[in-house]
Length: 106
Length: 120
Image (cartoon, rainbow over all chains, first blue to last red):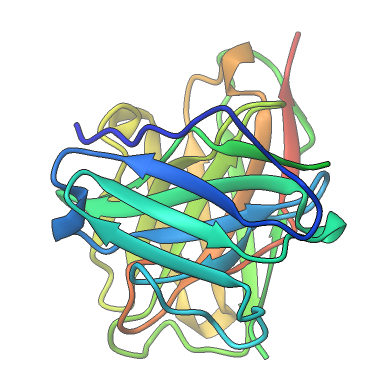
């Protein structure tokens, strides 16, 4: 089965740029989606199909995907961006999630 | 506006069968391409996809849990039901249902989730 690998944690200084990676075999050939989950809340889709933002998601959130790594980039990080972030792909008729990354804004 | 809400027992005993209902509004599960999925999250752990049902009644299951899961829909009631047999304490988790849109294979709208504890 397909596996997605994320770092357990990423830290970023307030106002700086955070990058969260999602590794998978030839993930660049797949559509990658990203979710934000704050404590006690349901996940929210923040990026779909590698780099597209749903309505209501700030432009500070962007994504890229190439080779074996997809990346979620959060520019001008704010305290409110502190959350868990999950990548997800569709593979062989299954929806696969990464293990999640906890983003801390310092 | 699309909304989904999960309902079901908060506590089940080991070996029992869990039945969860997802009641939704704002879309039709008769629309081509649309699906409703179930995803769970044990306390402090990652999301895990369980099952998805499409508008045409096509069903997909997590390979690791396929033997224990059944997903059905009642289009007239705007409901999707997930059953999971032979519950175990490791199945303790928050269970979410979510909408899959026509084009993307992402879950664009999620329910609030329902916490299920498996304990004798």
